[in-house]
Amino acid sequence: MIEETLKEAGEKMDKSIVALQNEFANVRTGRANPALFSSITVEYYGTPTPLQQLASFQTPEARTILITPYDKGSLRDIEDALRNSDLGANPANDGNVIRVVMPEMTEERRKEYIKLVSNKAEDARVSVRNVRRSAKSAIDKFVKDGEIGEDEGVRGEKDLDALTKKHVDHIDELFKGKEAELREV
Image: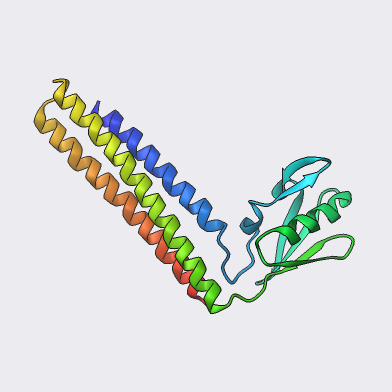
């Protein structure tokens, strides 16, 4: 029972870390990255469609991304969606591809992004702790109901604490890496 509870808690904590990694991928650094465009949707024949499904991406230079639509008829719609996004980029359309040059990041913008990343990391830590709390209450219930002994319950809690610490440390490492990436000029 404890093993199942710990395994389930570990899987939920892993999902929190994967969600954090996805959130971090959407935060812009000084380099151009196709993941920045993952949250942009384009009105394509009346249907909101993720940009990732409508075009391919190339990064010929550190701050430039070339977006090549699969359907040339969607060039104008993609360009409008990019212009209306919060990326602060000005897309240029040459009839075949859209060239997006990411603007230089100012020091003020870097600080904003670091604060944003810090908040996202804290949300992930809270999520991991919530999983720990529910797993601990399940272990306590097993002990209370007499399904397992007290010693087993204490051992299970120690294992749960170790699992929680491992995941929180991983979140801290991800945060430090992203912070260093954002500070890089």
